[in-house]
Image (cartoon, rainbow, N blue to C red; front, side):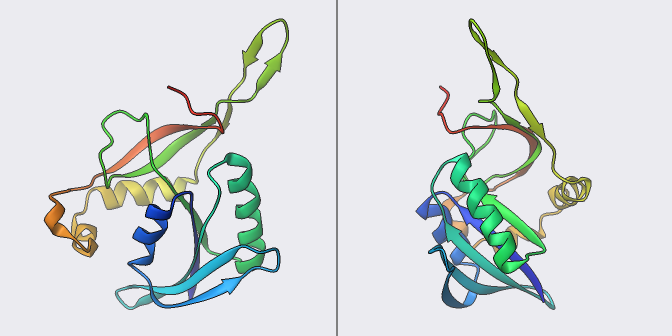
Length: 166
């Protein structure tokens, strides 16, 4: 059975993910993180999914990600959150990062010299996202079609940091 971990930074995202899981049970990590363990079915394939709501900061995301990887040894780990500041993103859209810029790193001299850290997702993830973007069958899984929301899959660079930029 495949295994996934999904970390969310907001309760609303956590609840949205939970609607797709069945046979849910609670599991508490020895260090205290409370996970909901459930199953997600895709055709004949069943995934075991662990989900947790974490604090909304890069530091929390990093430590919770490491903790979840060691504990569950997942095939995939996903951070679900709200994409703000990306042009043309609407409610319900799925954004797959093509590059992740950590905007808070840099060098302190007379003035701060930004040196963003850049990470890239795997080639396989980007290719899978492009393939799914060309399909529409994933939209059939949406539980409430009365909201008149037709989400898209976007591939775009994202910026991340603990400070909110306006």
